[in-house]
Amino acid sequence: MKVQMTDHCAKLKKVLRQQAAIAEFGTFALRELDLMKILTEAARVCADGLSVPFSKVCRYRAEHNDLISVAGYGWQDGVIGHVLSRADASSPQGRAFSSGEPSICNDLQKDAGFHLPPFYAAHGIVSTVDVIIKGSDKQPYGVLEIDNDQQHDYDQYDINFLTGFANVLAEAVTTTFSVEALRASVEQMKVLVEEKDRLLHDKNIADLKLRQSQKMEAVGQLTGGIAHDLNNILTVISGTIEILAEAVADQPEFAAIAKMMDEAAERGAHLTQRLLAFARKQPLQPREVNVNSLVMEAANLLRPALGEHVEVHMVLSGDVSPALIDPSQLTNALLNLALNARDAMADGGRLTIETGNAVFAESDASLSSDIVAGDYVTIAVTDSGHGIPANILEQVFEPFFTTKDIDKGSGLGLSMVYGFVKQSNGHIRIDSVEGRGTTVRIYLPRASHFAYAEDLVPTSPLQGGHETILVVEDDSLVRKFVIGQVRSLGYATLSAVDAAAAMVIINSPQHIDLLFTDIIMPGAMTGRQLADAALRCRPLLKVLFTSGHTENTVIHYGRLDADVLLLAKPYRKLDLARMIRTALAVEAQLQPVAGGGVGLIQHTA
Image (tube, rainbow, N blue to C red; front, side):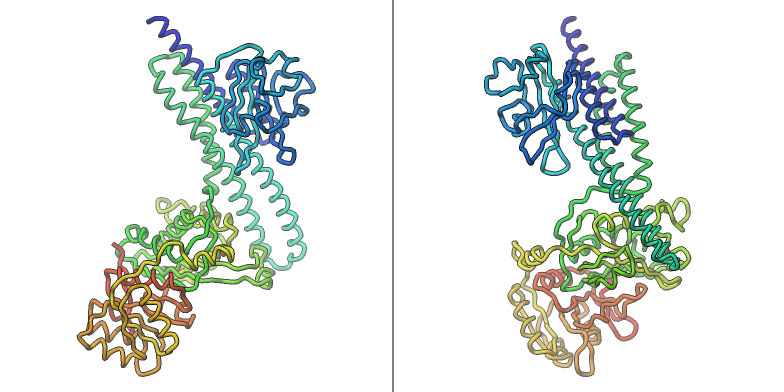
């Protein structure tokens, strides 16, 4: 029993020493940005953690398909920076690199499959362990190797330590590369800023925007990106330390070591928290996103947070292109904008979300260095609140700037949205008038033509139904097209050429679930007036409007002519199908509004 306790304590002491080595290296990597110093320190700490005399880091060279030693510990001159090995199974390093699994060799002399360079024999190397160092993309950085001049049976604790250490080293290497790229970007930005200042010195407003952009880019990209990478490392370290501390709580000697490790990790955590305070950045996973679908899903999340006093309205363009964006972060951005809008409408009001397409020409880009010409997808979030004074409008994207009371907000909401949009190669604009409301419009990069084509022909069947839809459209070609599309989705259809013909059907015993009507039609009644009259006859009737006039979808300071669910022309079948299902699923009904129109009132639950 005593022998077992001794063995247990020895293993526990070894694990604590190895975790302390990881913590030591993590703390070092937090404050050091020189790659060679990081690699050299990694080799030293790793060798010390496993009590071996030699270790080295090998970097993969894709152009030669080999591994070159770039840093090490314990070696004579002529090894580091010179020794090469193939990135295949002919060497211990190559086997680990090509397989992605740890390569353990307890006796090099017995492993006849390796072609070993002479320096192994010169140093008396007998056993090796190699693990892969992952990279920032699909290509690994290289291999971490420990070497021993004695035979040694490495246990699972040793392998776990070496693998965990290699993962921490990979994060540090990736962070260093990111910092170097950011430094180059910042230096390039400084050159551009100086050039712009010389050309636009007499334009104070443009100069102010340029300095603001420089500050936001530097703060948002540099501090946010680095802090997040380092926080990932510290999460692993801190969590492991917490488990170990609990396990040795009744052993004062080990508890003291665990406490020291925890304090070191906590200091690193404080550093990252200060960095993240300036820019809340998340790792982005951009993909092709149907913006209309995402907005509708986000609206469902918004309702509980906004409260019953805020009405939510959506104006979704039927021909909106797919965006190349991280969907989860876009949802978070919309939530932030919506909560800001809610706070601006203390007595209740209207929140409107609009989607569409936009194109920035070269002439637009020449007006501001912040704009890149190209195709974009737009999302506008508009409130009917108190608005923002003109003298502080330029400051709203700055971190910690807020006009709210101290306990009402951190001032990071809009700055987080700004950082996300800029990181996604997009743009953001805010327009506001005191007493009339605010519109925040974000411009997202449009997905490629390939992506657009895939969205036109979805891989899964469109969602249809068996309800009855009355289509009211004065243009015969459009009417026939719409009827064909609606029928292809499984619905039964009725049709009318104008409002008068539609009222004949509405006043008949014919069952109708949804009125799908154009807004602008010839005759005495518009589409909105038709809906108003139809609801007096059929209070439970659902209504979906459509229009080919963009002025019907323009939002000014959060005020729409009528509260409607609108499918703007032109639209695709996919959008038609989704909007029909949305209209049919709405529990609240269309009701008359001031001015003779009708609206779809979407009360928050």
